[in-house]
Amino acid sequence: MGLLGRAEPGVGHDRFATTDRVRFLARAGRVLDAARPERSIVRLTAELFVPKFAIACRVEVLGEEASAFLDARGDVRLYERRASDADEREPEATDPFEELQSRLTSSLLSAPIPGDTPGTLTVIVRRALEREDVIAVRDVARRVGAALERRRLAEEVRTAKRHHDELVLRTSHELRTPLASLSLHLSGLLRAARTGKLGTLGETTIEKLQRADAQLERVLGHIAQLVRKPPVDPRAIEISKSETDLSAVVRDVSERCATKAAARGFTLRVSAERPVAGRWDRELVQRALSNVVTYLLDSAPPGELEMAAHRSRGGARAFVRVQRFGIPAADQAELLRGGPDVSTPDRLGLFIARRIVEAHGGRIRVRSSRGTGTELVLFFPGTDA
Image 1 (cartoon, rainbow, N blue to C red):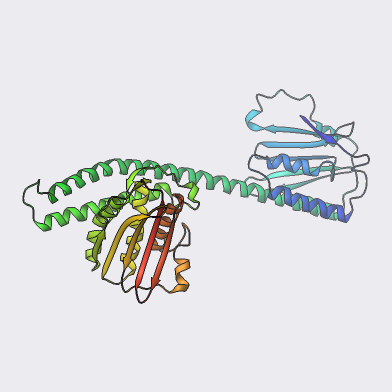
Image 2 (cartoon, helix red, strand yellow; image 1 turned 60 degrees about the horizontal axis):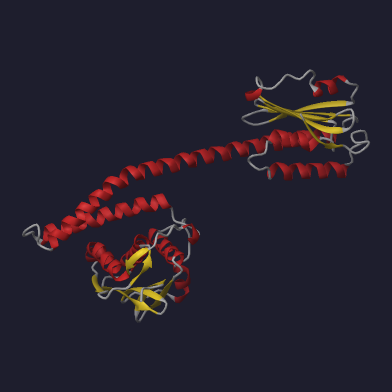
């Protein structure tokens, strides 16, 4: 039992004015709507009524009970009980609420609390209850039922989300470990085939190995994207910087996209022979560049796609260019905007690419016109001298 405060002299004896009732209902709505998850709706409701509206209030919902009341000295006290701790609590000699009911009080009113977990709201007042008082108590009871239902649904959503996240993490781990090992072995076989270490293999066999490697890398990318979730805030991306050669990343992306480019009728031209070293997250940089290349392969008409990397003032730049593909000026500003809920996969890929570049402290720019084509530039600050 706890002491909440002291009532003002005369509280509970006078007629409850219309303005008082309106203010009471407005406050009840604000308190119940803004109740934090850790606060008990049952306790909040009991505290709402005493001493402004009643000398005592009891709220009972599914094994939880809270009573607020005025004691003989005019202090507001709270009495709480839960079904889970009924055996651990020392028994009270007398229930204070029952004591108040036994006195010569003017009025007692009980209203049902609707919902999947129904309960009862009971108030005791010293004045004669008016019709508007009955309406007010029933209105608060309905609000309590709605607040309890919102809390129940929110808890179900949190539980479902927790189970979903656990399932995604568990499944991705089970898939990623063997697939990563398979990708490593397949990449080794592909390098050995290209250098002739596996003997004489036909171009068809090497192309099949390339396709398998590209598809496996795509699956691993989808798994990583599923686990990480597209971040809305670049600060949410975890960067793991290491010595990275941007030219090597460009060449690697071109190799991985070669099969798709050929299938779409594109010819790849790569200008990334000289090392461009810096400290970046290689995996994320590769993912950003791959997303940009994928967008252009999916959107531009067949032709030549050029990729390049070189040093720039204060950092390094990677370029991806296509000819005969112009983006209207009005659409260029919107191209990189969006979020994790954008409707098309290519726009989602560009959004992720922009966030990755910004997380490194860089920027991504679009240069496009119908006459010259489209160029996307990824700038990453900081390179080795």
